[in-house]
Amino acid sequence: MKIAAEPITELKLAGITKRFPGILACNNVSLQVARGEVLALVGENGAGKSTLMNILAGLYQPDAGTITVNGQEVRFHTPNDAYDRGIGMVHQNFMLVPNMTVTENVALGLKKLHKFMNLDLKEARRRIIEVSEHHELPVNPDAYIWQLSVGEQQRVELVKTLCFGAQLLILDEPTSALTPQETDDLIDRLKRMTAELSIIFISHKLNEVKALSDRVAILRHGAVVFNGQTADHSPADLAALMTGREIHLPRNEGMELGREVILKAEGLKVRGDRGHLALDGLDLELHAGEILGLAGVSGNGQRELAEAFTGLRPVEGGTVTFLGQDMTRRNPAAMIAAGLGYIPEDRHHEGIVPRFSVKENLILKDFHTAKFSWSVVLRQGGIRRNGDELKTAYDIRCASTAAAGGSLSGGNIQKVILARELAREPKALIAVYPTRGVDMGAQEFIHAQLLTRRREGGGILLISEELEEIMNLSDRIAVIYKGRILKVLSSLEATRERLGLLMAGVADE
Image (tube, rainbow, N blue to C red; front, side, top):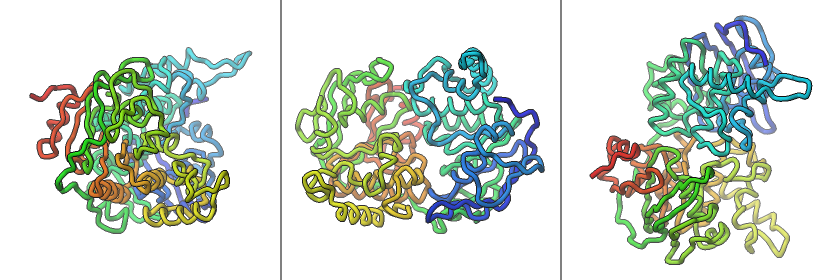
């Protein structure tokens, strides 16, 4: 793959239109980006942001409109065409092969044809080291992708795109998997990178939009409804422009908690994917009618804890108790039957079956019940009615519940998972990053649903790296560090500064 020789001084999109069956995804969109500029592209889930950028990256073809680079009209039939002109995209859903190393993933795009079609791993490794050092984006070239945290994989995607010679970076929710500290660090690095390249920054986090971008374009229902200077508008202004109404994120009012312990870990020891003890003697209690926030820097055992509670990861030591019963080595089916709900970290691969329809994804845990099946025959009428009811109740935006689950936007996939789990009225719910990558309107809705479940007496373990989310919703906040709970604070005791120190391992006496 060759690196673009001509610097990109200006990129223009004019009248871009894209239709899918039943959906007008992009409606006559016109934008431009100058060299060294950061353009933020914001809008609700399903507003057309990713579709528009997939057109610019060569993954989709527009039905109408033109793309010009430095005044010359171009047409990208493949991502390779876009890279050849210096345009690269870091997708929200990573384009990485899990069972290959970082070097091998980069080499797939940098491959040179030798006599036996071998990948040039030496050149790929050299390029990775050169780019990561130049842009201060540390990655381990020899690590397997499956061994890396979501945040580390995001960094690999960024380095990979730069290795391919991108001069205009399209970043689709680049901070959705990062901690607040990692986010601040990435924004600082991106600001420095604008001395050499331009950035189109897709994000739902309006504080980050304000911190990084020079201009902001807002899409609503596939059309540009605002395009102007970021500095002229507050986050609240931008949120109102996105949704057409004011957004008010609900807060936990701190009503009386239930005292019954419904989910408990004692001395829990669980190994991570690399064989180390990711949880090393962890103790934790979740009560009925409370939201217990779990705060921590990514990679300190959050995923392993969620998977141990749900029966997805074997427990090496200690116990898991659910509703007074020892469930330490029970499988996921037993945990589901006992009344445990789970919103997983990876919604695309663990939360839904992308090829199944929306209505089928909504019954994944209950398809065998009398409501949805008779013997071995599915009751299609009941499945359809359930899908339509949940689509309306949870504002799932899709043309039909017969549409493939994987065709929905990220925020609407999250609503499908939330609807499936909450409709079952779980006694306890493990919610891992429930609002990652969703717009503020969807955040408002999801937070309200979690608080409703709390008022109904359900216990919720909220695992999030968004401190504001944890502080707004939680009754108590537990800080995890190196596989142990460092401290549990009441919501009244918790401050950003105190939580930040605890997340860094500074014991609070």
